[in-house]
Image (cartoon, rainbow over all chains, first blue to last red; front, side, top):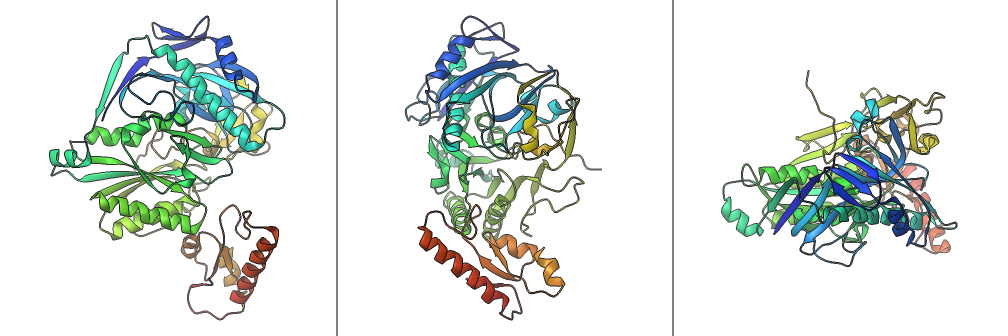
Amino acid sequence: MKLEIGRINIKDIQFGDGTFVQDGVLTVDREGLTAFLKEDERVAGVRLDIARPGEKVRIIPVKDVVEPRVKIEGTGAGFPGVTAKPSQCGQGRTHVLYGAAVVTVGDIVGFQEGVIDMWGEGGRWTPFSKTCNVTLDLQVVDGLDTHTHEETIRLAGLRAAEFIGLAGRGAEPDEVLTYEMGGIFEETEKYPNLPKVLYAEMMITQGLLHDTYIYGVNAQTILPALMHPHEELDGAVISGNCVAACDKITTYQHQNNSVILDLFAQHGKEINFMGVVMVPEHTTLSGKLRASDYTLKLAQMLGADAVVVSEEGYGNPDSDLLMICKKCENAGIKTVLITDECAGRDGMSQGLADTASEAVAVVSTGNVSHVVTLAPAERVIGNPESIAVLAGGWKGALLEDGTLMCELNAVIGSTSEIGYHHVTCRQY
Amino acid sequence: MVKEIERYGIPIVHMATITTISESVGANRIVPTVAIPHPVGNPALSPEDEYALRKELVGRALQALATEITEVTHFE
């Protein structure tokens, strides 16, 4: 399978007549996009805005972030099974407006959405302070239940990314990244002496607006599934999560999964990267036991020497993470775990809800409980009062002068467990 | 909380869905429950069946409290 990602570098963004890219500036047709989003009868009002890197702008509460893209060659246009008819992702050529993002804003459940600051202290913690953002603040018609509200906003974000992504159709990419990987036997024949490494990507699939979708299938309903890494990089996986902002994997982060990209970079050099197992995180013990057993079985069937496991969320999924670790290690398959920590504001508490002596190689992506103080913004997109009900915020967290205090919990992507963020470790 | 109450000398039972976490935090009497969002209920059941389920779970927890144990014990 061969996938080409053509990056069209976006340096600035503006509203204007038509949607196109010229000299690295993305122009977005505000009226056209508004009308397009209003084709969904559940959308009552659309407020579009722009937030640029470095501007003293705060976006709150953020639901999802999506990268605008367009398919140039091959199947898999749009988000198959969600906004477009089902088709195979991961092959052909996709153009990406690299440096641009669609950000969906607005209260849905009243907690567990996040904040993006485009500058200063807050901007240091979120990767989406570096993107030129089009924000969508949507009002839905009266009487929608919460799940339909979430679905409406989720689809609007994806459709907006498609609408804006069309600007990449005629543009010449500044850079073309080529990913190519043959069948598992073929690659193993090519690299017989390299360790065979599988990536197990855990996904929040817990219902109650905590869901992830693969080709439109709610991943709550699946057994762990083997995917070609290209598929996720090409729009097969999307977020439907209203969950703690710091470590939910936004759709943008699925499209640019850092673990996949890093494993690709080592493929054929230090490792033989075999593929991705998408592992659902269940709310029942039997679900967790079944998913971890099944993940081990897939690793054994593929003859994996090692599995890199990334978690999504914290708390109960810590047990899934350690079940996979224990089962693999006891079967002679090495594991590396990637997780954040919920270690209290002083960082002194136990980082995970569960422990295992088999977990000997663990990468921490940060402490979600770390408190940050964010200076007042000149402009707020959305509703600053919502910090009182965000996970990681509290009543009184918004001071009178507009200063915001919160745990990293509330900052989008700040402790990303797939490593798509800015936190680094230093040993003293 | 489970450990501190037990340390004080009051028998305690941990009703929890993810019993592996119960074990790792040091609970001794464990009653496995239904699911994280609804530990002692099940919205998929009829009200009558759910009531029976809840009564059975609480009964099992009371039984666990009244049972002498010498090691970590699951009451399934």
